[in-house]
Image 1 (cartoon, rainbow, N blue to C red):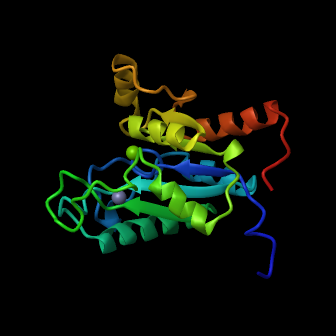
Image 2 (image 1 turned 120 degrees about the horizontal axis):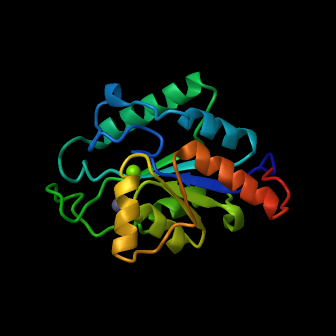
Length: 206
Ligand SMILES: [Mg+2]
Ligand SMILES: [Zn+2]
């Protein structure tokens, strides 16, 4: 090992992709359909500047359903990185689950450990990066994202972009695990978590 980077754990922000960073398009397999949500690049840039690991964790059951293949998911992810890069924002990792028990392709029709709210994607990320979970946060637009945060033992923020507004009502109606915060979008969530961090008077992430 040449540097201490891998050995020094950093705080991470786990991010959902669809409806949180990009416009929810329901089963997006076409890179031309990638559209950043307003202020999302700014939010990610801020996290980059503050030394957070930015790790995307996304369920892509469209693969198991036969709507698009894993290469298409990669193409969409590459397009996302490209659009963010133009605005000076970068993702440290993108991890996706292609499985779904109700899918049509036998290879992917399994009860896997990586479909959120299970935490297999976070485990995969943590094989690659040393993550300090104590000040890490999950941000997403669905109840499963909030449950993922709870399962991982970290705080979670529900954004009301994508399915977030409807999910907020469902979480209340069905008494699902509530988020620590409900924010209007990713930037609002990030501003809150950075302020929360300094309120708790903790040293910076790097
Ligand atoms: Mg989503
Ligand atoms: Zn999976």
